[in-house]
Length: 407
Image (cartoon, rainbow, N blue to C red):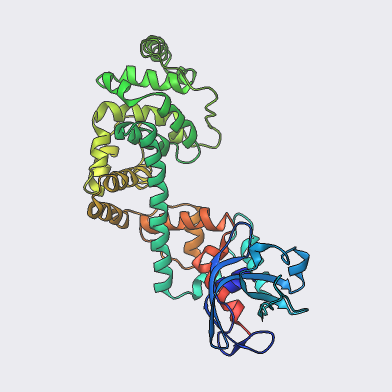
């Protein structure tokens, strides 16, 4: 009933109150998530007289008394009581009768909501609804979702910048490291980067052995390098020396995950890549923050050779999930909003991610033709579908609205 009332999903013509007075809904009000009436600051017109105040909603009018509203001062400003069943008249403490509006909801509405919200992780119950939505409506929603995801990432980056006293190099390093975890090891990578300042690593960026030794030691993964016995022994000695020199300690219980990972996705390989990146591009964070094109981003992250090099697909994911958000966050931080808009547009030039989410929505008819769209789909699935927020999704809302108004 709250959803139907707030979205006006009921016939708007020839409305009357329970006693037959003419009723017009000007503004349903603002949802109240705290104590007191359900909606604040509503505006209605009853028999030509305009009323501004609050609205309370109950299944039965008599619930007013069951919920103890009769003598509660917070409910004395209610101008309209919205009910499904008008089983009794309701009066204020001063004896004035509260107008009541009987709002009948389609019985199928609840069933429709649960058919959307109660689904298995691999299902997309709104697939048929997606196919029926006009393209312009769908494009508008995906655009909003793409920017919503971008700003969620910007919020995370800004929090890291604040935690590092405005140091964008450290924030960028932490963000790139987290992205190298590719979801599975994102948290361990972020903790590793936070415990191993970039400013320390950059002092020895001309020596790959030192950089890799510090990172592997801080990650607690020196024992995983035993396939290069002599090199691993040197790494252990280097780490012991530099850990003491700089007063750094390995974080406890990083929880690296190795199972079901392809060899190229191993944390050891990814840490080796990070070490090579630092050595190859001493100023790589500055270049990322000021990147001008996707090609430049690929040149920064893809110019790492040897066994630690990333595949083109992995570099693409890094550009999408770390480089573009970092550059966008920095542009907004410095107030260069024109540049921020140009950076966001770069996502339209990048290949889309290929994952179970994009495959699922592509099967429902969405044309996943760019990284911007694939990011929008990830946002939609994680922040709306998985959180059962169908009522806040424009696809779910449109589907629910059609059901509510259906006779």
